[in-house]
Length: 79
Image (tube, rainbow, N blue to C red; front, side, top):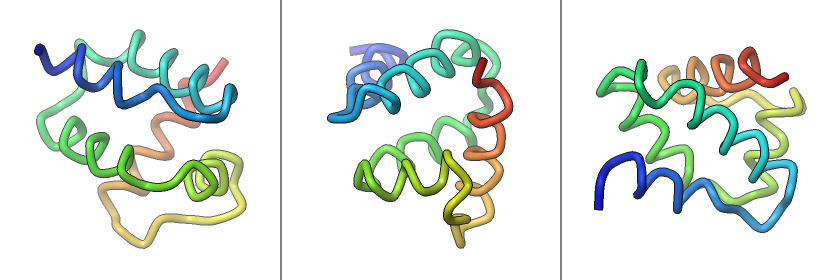
């Protein structure tokens, strides 16, 4: 399974808003993500849905700097 396919599968969440946000981000950015960002995305996708919602909607900030930068990038690419 390719990296994009694996990440696409992991972006499928139990909350529609997360599905849309993460899916759109992956579609737009997969070709330009660095190896560090891909690793951070894999780690981010291990978080529970409620924690991701808090990060993406500005209710909480990740303590990990790489995750925090990635969350900011995901938020900035949302339409």
